[in-house]
Length: 63
Image 1 (cartoon, rainbow, N blue to C red):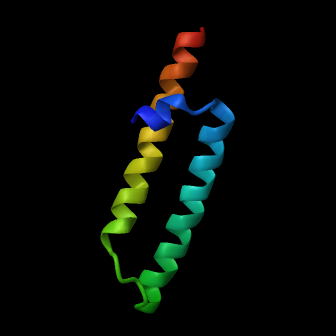
Image 2 (image 1 turned 120 degrees about the vertical axis):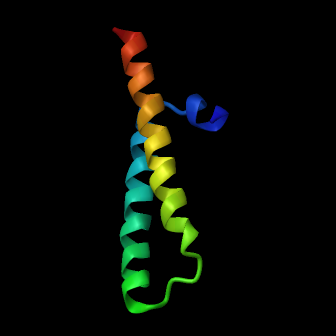
């Protein structure tokens, strides 16, 4: 969490975008039977939520 809080808003947006791309690729791997680490899908989803939560908190403080 400390790493996420240290990110700038632009870095957070980039991180969310990268994680969404990763989730997209993981879904394809799962569908084709190539996904080895199935827990990574859940981890990526939670990381996206964490980053979005911290971003919303920072936006609320700026108001």
